[in-house]
Length: 299
Ligand SMILES: [Zn+2]
Image (cartoon, rainbow, N blue to C red; front, side, top):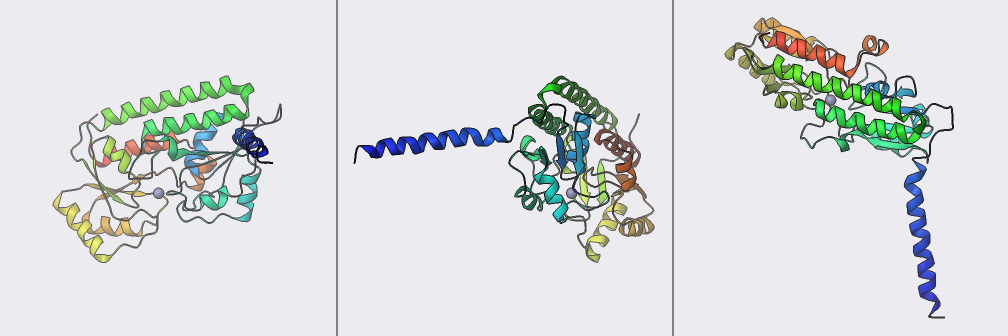
């Protein structure tokens, strides 16, 4: 009897190895010939990147409705069904989307999951896409997932990825030269802390009034300190997020006479920009324009 135990163990082990080797591959099962991969993105960052890489070769949907706040969203039962039926689900991270773990549990056995932040360089600020090198890495991860699901169109995905990477390198260069020589390097942001990766990369200082969530309450004392800071440092413009209430920035502007300019987090998109399919690159070009104007940068 005893000598059978190793044989049983061996069989169990072999079965385990077989199962393990099979499990990840189920996520890589390609779509049926002639069908488009169904991509579900948590929010606008993975959505717009997936659309740019896929072109019209995949059906890309977004869970977060346009205009909705990404950090405190609550997924609907419909969202869970979408993820269950998706070939690819892309989200940024649990830090950006604390609700993603609920959605993940609904992923189907053929759903390949891409956690974008995993491919970005480590940073204290979870808004990792605010760095063009990270955006490239995230796009590459999405392209890889698409190629696994739809190997027949690998060349098209690779071409779109290359074009995206070139766009990112050009943007990086524009930010380097465009922000090299400015009268001020103080980015005073009335909004949530989403731009640390961007300001760090181009040698700018960032003071943000609110915390890391979109609807953090600001104390009267914080507001008074900000106004004092603006006056003391002769700040000419402040930045805010288009999708936030203008109440606070308007109050600061009324008190100090500063101009209010928009900065786009990309994670939060207006209905108008969503409907027009405004890309990540386009929103970042608008950011550069705002920064150059607000900081009085030379040509
Ligand atoms: Zn955010």
